[in-house]
Image 1 (cartoon, helix red, strand yellow):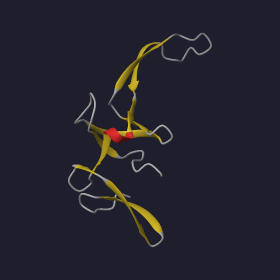
Image 2 (cartoon, one colour):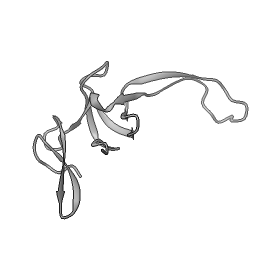
Image 3 (cartoon, rainbow, N blue to C red):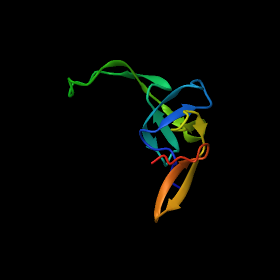
Image 4 (cartoon, rainbow, N blue to C red):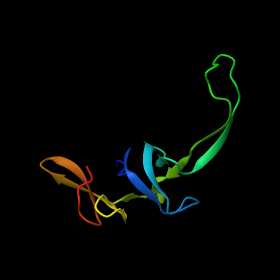
Amino acid sequence: MPARIRRDDEVIVISGKDRGKTGRVLRVDPTKQKVFVEGLNIVKRHQRPTPGRPDAVAGVIEREGPIHLSNVMLLDPKDGKPTRVGVEVREGRRFRIARRSGTTID
């Protein structure tokens, strides 16, 4: 089953340390069922300077960590509140719809 949340969707985190925060999805990993949301679940990584790559950033790097798909919900484009996502087939094409308001997402 394909993920119902895609890149550039606006989502809200419903569980975990960033609960209640919203952001834009940067990328989705469907095999691991993880999403990376802009500015949320920030993790620190210590990067050693590499002699072969002088342009690489060294030191402590902060970047977005993965969040499980079950811990985020799509924001309804109509009123900006969390909604479940449904799939509807019209004219032979699949459309994602917001269950809260029934509006088409894409």
